[in-house]
Length: 362
Ligand SMILES: *Cc1c(COP(=O)(O)O)cnc(C)c1O
Image (cartoon, rainbow, N blue to C red; front, top):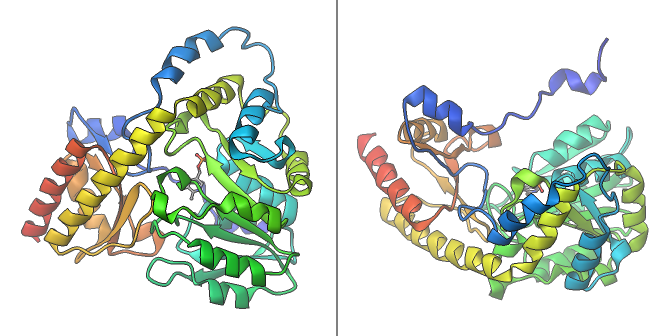
């Protein structure tokens, strides 16, 4: 049996190195994973306390509508409850958007490099992919607008962009949405929203009222630190959210994940600490990069995309032997770069020591 034609040139997602494998391979006892933009501070203690109470009645299907989480989040965001769609991670919401709006004969416009799941899921739906190179890590919004045509159904804006970290400012967003056809769905993926420096906050939610063709994606996987529990969400007009909820599987988030997300929302102190420490550690790491003579893209996220005098793979291999997993830019079309998640203060200073040793050895 042959799968759809497009599958012939595709492969399953290759995850970052697994901690246990690296330990065994290199005889290391401790590994620091700075490859997938996870939260180095873990997640709220309140979630740890709450989870044991959630394991009763695992034989019963979850509330697919995620009623309690939906009510609390809608209040917090000041949007209607029917404007939300929850997914098994925002990854799933990306897939749901593709299934709802894309098919053969349509196209979808995105930056490159950007989050790879947009292209992956759009290809499966048979859509044509239109990629517009970033400029210095930033979306080239003018060219993206030019590329939109009658077949365009979805445009992806990743802000802060993964892997560069660059933010689309509120002015630029406004101007883009003003000129983009109302027939085109604009997806604004804000997976790193909670990390954006307060002074740069684009207040994107306010745009939903003016642009019914906008969908905003956020997640509990990054700053809230529960990547393992898989909860992400989209915020859209009621009409759009209703379509997306038609495409959603009936029980796509579990009770444990819903309740954990709800509990995460209640611990504002944890989120604040994550935000502050990330900012401080990121600034210190930027300074270290300056001292090492390495340049990097502007980042409003919890990672830095660092340019190298050698290949990203070479630094990746070197650091792996020292117990640090980072993400080489090779697979992202930037062979001379690495994406490094901002870890704790101690992790970052040890990383910098190793990076200095590497640079001295080449
Ligand atoms: C991590 C990430 C996601 C996916 O997060 P989920 O765990 O699926 O919620 C989505 N978009 C971007 C840009 C990301 O970096």
